[in-house]
Length: 86
Image 1: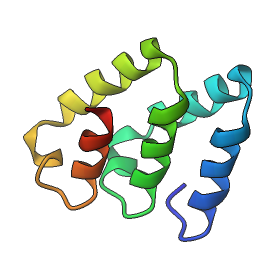
Image 2: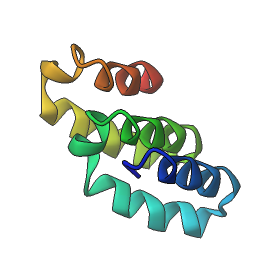
Image 3: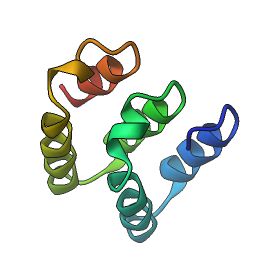
């Protein structure tokens, strides 16, 4: 997910996945939210996930982002994740 090319693969998988597959991928993403949000390529995966996850997953993701604190808003990658959430 944090690879220059691998992030595109994950984004396409999220785009074409069924709900069961999305649930599995979100489980992996959820365990790495902070490192992904601050990563140049990982933040793109989170942004794509936000487009396809359920409202309950979205709520869970936002709670995790709130735990990171205000530094995510000032990060060049993290702020894109926050913008997508909004």
